[in-house]
Length: 466
Ligand code: FAD
Ligand code: NAD
Image (tube, rainbow, N blue to C red; front, side, top):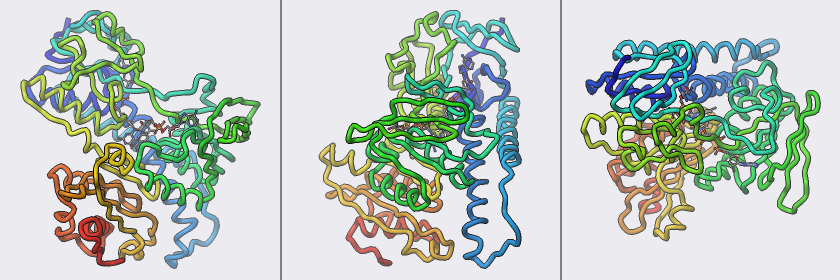
């Protein structure tokens, strides 16, 4: 029987990053993955393929709607070849997952293909291609998550689908009904809207992206409405029925009336659930919470002292970079180091266009906590770079402590915010004040100037360009 210092179950961004860090720190490391390709949800059916389709559909929209403004004329019709677009997405996925194979080899990590389940707290049974039993002093559970569902919906995966199927459709829907105005619904809804589908977003709460700052929800809602999405807020879906090629969704509105929506596809994006299926956690005595998460303490250690858990399968944001941080954290803990994760500074990004990004506290959270704060906001349309590029929607908002001026939260929506948010994270990691940001030179003309201007507005209400 092969024996390891550490064995990791699951090869998503949590698991594979943990494996690399364990190996770097001198541990003999194994990783077990039930699928033939490494990289988990993120690389195979999540972050990477969705961003590939967002990029392709964005190019199409630019070509059909905006090239002309720039004096670029394309004689003849511009058409989408969906099969080719999906094929390109798959080749991006293949290259990326292939890169993880390379990293595993480079770091001398043994990869086992098969379903991993506990025999006891130090032994894992592998069923599948590399069937065998292995032994490990320490085990990291990194089994991720699966699409969630509502109890009354039958996911036939043809017309009533999750994100996984939405990433490989064979036709452009005529009318896609999206249940859930969260990250997946908005990103994938935008892909198919740009490609020509009618898209209706049905959201239970009174706004899209209900966990983000309300200012961001409002601005994105405005942009989506302008792009002719049907945005149905405060609608509770009650039934989904398939009749041939038609899908009928019934939802209750605020007045208690039942509203009916008819489409040819229905994307169910109501959240994801932790995945512990097949793990046989009981055999090792590992506790699973009522919500299905593996229970961990502040060291990401389960109730069994040599077993840890990270990523989507534990509490906290279901984000790839959060899983990665936790992977490194556990590896360093096992090596006797004292790592730290500042969960308040894990940024959240929605890759729609305009992009939405945030870090730290929202206005709603500060109000609820009774923190006295000041807000400085700056619109992108006042920036030369935004006008030059033609991307005018959005703003940067900086929230700072009223007395100390320390930045408590930064919320932005606009072109390139997914990358701009990194400056906000650095500033907050070093506990910058709004004045600190306002005194830093920001290259001109850039979208990043909105950070400086918002900081000026927050410091002394003295933005320069509004
Ligand atoms: P996962 O990536 O889910 O990996 C878990 C792995 O464990 C899987 O490969 C699974 O097959 C394997 N596994 C499970 N059980 C076993 C077992 N018993 N034996 C062997 N193997 C097992 N996050 C972002 O930060 N940015 C984004 O842009 C983003 N976009 C997304 C888009 C979509 C459409 C979706 C669905 C998700 C997106 N996410 C994004 C979320 C991100 O994918 C997850 O947060 C991330 O993948 C979690 O990593 P993980 O390592 O915890 O688990
Ligand atoms: P989500 O939690 O972002 O959104 C789900 C939405 O569905 C919420 O707004 C919720 O109010 C709504 N909802 C729930 N029940 C409903 C009902 N009965 N009727 C109507 N609406 C209902 O979940 P998601 O979009 O499925 O994404 C799952 C996870 O994947 C998220 O936690 C996210 O972090 C991760 N993800 C991240 C990214 C990214 O970082 N860019 C992209 C995709 C997914």
